[in-house]
Length: 102
Length: 235
Image 1 (spheres, rainbow over the protein chains, first blue to last red):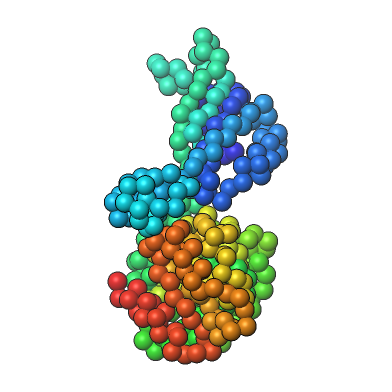
Image 2: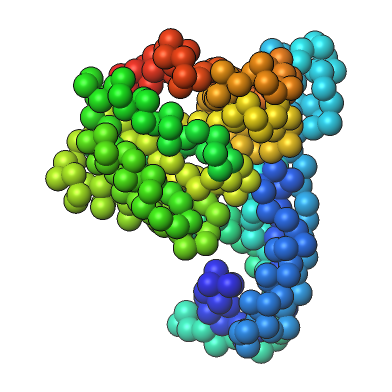
C-alpha cells in the first residue's frame, strides 16, 4: 500500500484503478490470502478504494545441472540427457508489475 | 505530470494511465537483508539461519555445537520465538552471548528484526567481532523460507519423528537452503523414517544441498556438522 500511494503521488494520480501483481508458485504466498489482505487494506484508503487486483501466477522452471537445458517444472528427468539433477529456477517472486491510475 | 515545471498537475487529456513497475513487494525486507549481510561480514562473521518445525532440535544442537566449538571460535546467537526468553537463556547458560527476539505472534523473523538483534548482540556482548552468528528462526517450515535475513548460509533441519516426507511437502525451505540436517537419528529404530526417501526427495528439489545425519546422543555423528561449520568460519 505504501508503494502504491508513493506511485500515485509520483504520477499525480487521484485514484488507483488496477494493480497487477505476479506471484510465483514457490514464493510461499497464497494468492487467495493475498487478495483478501489487499481488499481489506485497499478499502481503508481513499486512493486505493476503487482498486481491482489482478494476479498472474508464475511457474518455476528447472535447469538441468548436467547439460544446462531448461525444462518444465513437472518433469522428473532431463528431456535431453536423462539426468535427475534438475534444479528449480524462478517462481519465487512477489512482484508489483503494473499499476493503472487516474 | 507537467513536462515544463515538473509539478504534479495531471494532464487533463489523459484520464487513466498505466505505469510499469516491476518491483518486488518484499523489496524493503530484501534491502535490509543486504545491509545485514554487509554488517555480518564487517564483523568477520558468517551468519547461519536455522529453519525447522518446532521441536526438531535447533536449540539442543546449538548447545552441543557450542560445547565443541566455543574454545576455537567466537560464537553469537540470535534467537527467534513467539514468546519467552527460554532459548536465549539456554544459550547464555553456556557463556555465549545471545539475544532473544520475541515476535509477539509472527511466525518468522524478518530482516529488520534481525538488524535490531544484531545491534543488541553487539551491545550486550561488548564485542564487534564474531566468527559465527547463528540465527535460530521461529519454529516453522513455511514462512521463514520466504524471508531473507541477510544470512550467508541457510540450514533446514528435520527430526526423525517428523517423518521423511517433509522435503516433498515443504519444498521452498529445501530449495532455498544450502544444508539439510536430519536430526535425532538415534530414534530411527522406532520410527518409519526413510533416510533414502528424505535424501532423494531433498536432492531432487535442490541437487546442490549438503545433507547430514546426526544425533546429539552420539557425539561422533556431529563430526560432519562441526567440520562444515569450521569450513564456513574459515571463509
